[in-house]
Amino acid sequence: MTLLDNLCKVNNQQGGTIHQFLANNDWRNMDRFQKSYDEFIELGIKFPSKRSLEKLANQYHITIDWRK
Image 1 (cartoon, rainbow, N blue to C red):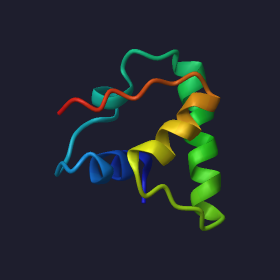
Image 2 (tube, one colour):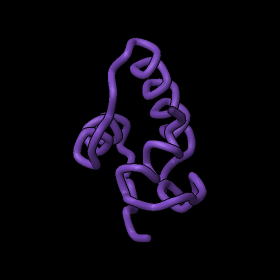
Image 3 (cartoon, helix red, strand yellow):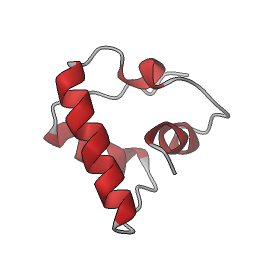
Image 4 (tube, rainbow, N blue to C red):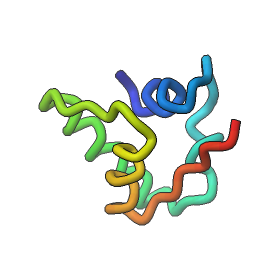
C-alpha cells in the first residue's frame, strides 16, 4: 500500500493527492518520511490509523492535513 493509499484509507476517502495531505511541509523532510514509510511497509509494519501515521510523521517534523 502506498503512502497516499494509506492516508486516504484512514481518512475514509476514495482518493486524493499527496499534496492534499502534506502540502505545507518541507519537501526534504517529506522525502525522508516517504522513505521511512516504504521501509516499514516492506518489513510488514502497518499503519492502520491516523494516530499511527501521525507518530511516524512527527519524527520527520511533518504535519498531516486530515481535512477532506
